[in-house]
Length: 411
Image: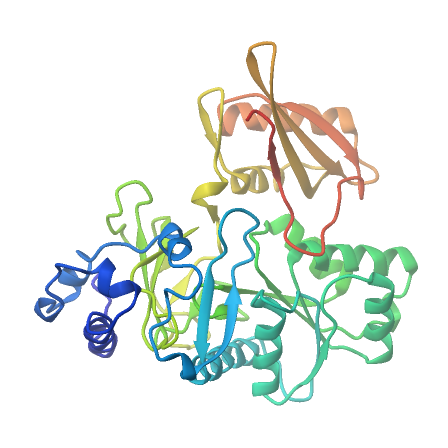
């Protein structure tokens, strides 16, 4: 657990001294703390966490930690509720982000001979531009499609002979299904899929990989910390390597904030080491993962976290039972005939909570058996029995962005 190296400690210490000596968000946040007296990792862990609410309160440019003339760009988180979070970037931040995303592509075996088809959104969101900057950094040809217009996406994919698809898992699945439906698989040249921005289960991964005929890689990141590109899995798929010369990661107990042992699941907390425009100290991401101990067979010295297992704010409580969408993902993986796609509806009727799970089924599946198996698995593994409605493959909505899995209609 004591895994902060000397270089990381020095960078954090310099950052803290700088931030508490200038008029910015962290000067107020760390008021009364003797930053000069922080001498080791243990002292660092006593610093307060930074929360999303802090960043919202700093709207519009309270996070800016350099003079305005050094800011070249702003991005904003993709959250749909409340005040947005505005993150300012210096030119160095933009370059550092491109460097990190470039490493992600290289780890996935992408080269300057690839043609990279980018479908995530552009604009204030960090997705599209992040995928693009990294691709240009390694000298690959970029095809900056952005989201939507599936007909045009598939035409360009064929005509440009795109070899790498960048997408959310939801949109990758939608494209895979369209390619199969139209029978154009032999005109698609994809070999890799770089999938970002949402948690997805093993069953969905296998479907996309099989239908597109590609190797899939998970890329991780969040707007508050550069954007996508701070971590990716390698060919051995033993977790995501993160760039520990740019970010320091802790895994803490979401309830107590105390560090958890390596290998145990907790919330990812990130401290930026080199960020200039809007540095972050001990930022609570709400993403759940664990540190993967030991060395990776790929030989990379960069440490690993597991693929994102869910979010602390994903959890819903039904009939006194805490339920995460990741548990449902995991459960469906073992149900014959059940597909990867599901949606949960929670209603309050006749004085009680009712949870309905809609699950897509394989074409030849016996829906009665699927329903029975899911109910049994829920009772055994989660501790409650929902209503289960098996539906045909393709019946649940597909999204160009992130899929919403849980609809809680009780409030």
